[in-house]
Image (cartoon, rainbow, N blue to C red; front, side, top):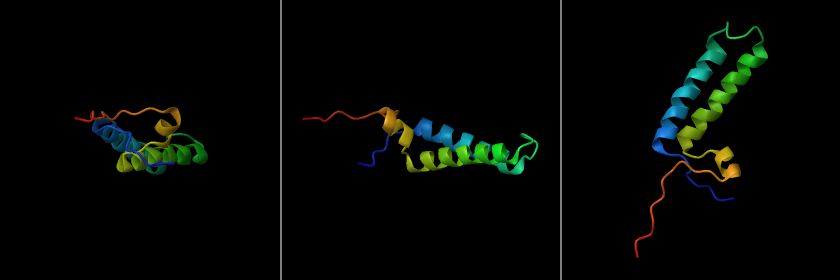
Length: 76
């Protein structure tokens, strides 16, 4: 499978900010839920978003054949 950047700058920025917030809520804000497992799951989802935004590649976008990145047409 080929690694392709499939996220726009806006998409990356939103994912990194939202992912960081989810990590904070899941790990450091203990009253989110009464279940530790749910808190860790929220943090894990946040980590996925931060990593996807950092690498500019979302595996779920690849599976769904979606790209938020604008492509340049070849000038011939």
